[in-house]
Length: 114
Image 1 (cartoon, rainbow, N blue to C red):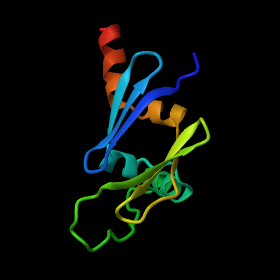
Image 2: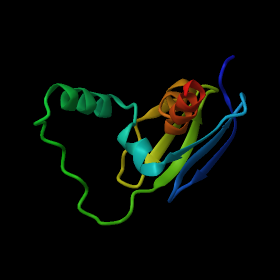
Image 3: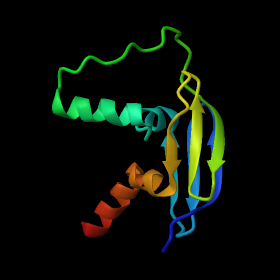
């Protein structure tokens, strides 16, 4: 089955809720989406951190405002791009990638095995 969202609900200060065409519902907190952004710069940072635990992290923004999702844009019929309050806007989340980072899905699948 080709997984696609039936409904997307972005709560800018909380996260993205997705209802999938297979009946599953996912929720992605804003901070998780930002951390796991599929942008090239974030992927390179994650790879560097895996290979070198002493990686120096980039400076975090100095404002103390809570991270929010400022905007969302559908990219064709395969993805969504989110713009975050810290200025990050280069990650395009494909439906396949979003489903792969769904923590609740992993929990549900583990329950089926147990």
